[in-house]
Length: 196
Image 1 (cartoon, one colour):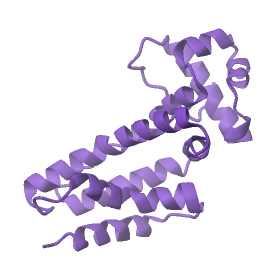
Image 2 (cartoon, helix red, strand yellow; image 1 turned 60 degrees about the vertical axis):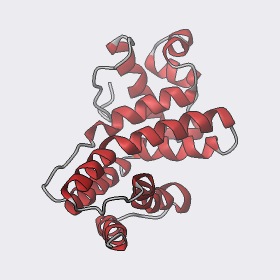
Image 3 (cartoon, helix red, strand yellow; image 1 turned 30 degrees about the vertical axis):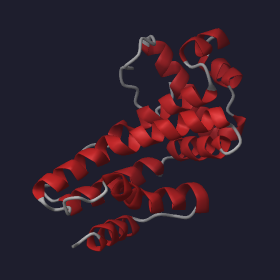
């Protein structure tokens, strides 16, 4: 088994050993060959399982790789430092650390590229990433509003987008490096611009 990822119990009824083998195989293929060369057939062969097994639990390549992305993102946690600005910086730094790993970056970059030409993939990927964005980030923003660290009445969806859009633009569109300093500057720009 590859040591690229740590497999946690699935929220669905996929047999844990099957999920572990399949997602580990997908991570290895992504890291070694890139998104374009990952196929359901290749994952099945590398995992030593039947294609029908893959399609039973993951009906599409996007579904399989979104599951892999969820596993890779399990390290993201609510920092809850006592200060909203520090929490947001810590969150973006966690996101940067996760996306610095080849399998996570290859998964996200490949899925968003495919989504540009496949409407079904676009719908699945965008819905999933919207939910992903809101999980920890939404908790931090809720707490910041309750503390008064974020001005009441702020459109929270726009705030979430302002905080993460530069990050995803750099990684997925411009293919440029992101630093922890960049993450801190984006948080400061968002919060300082919302002072009123």
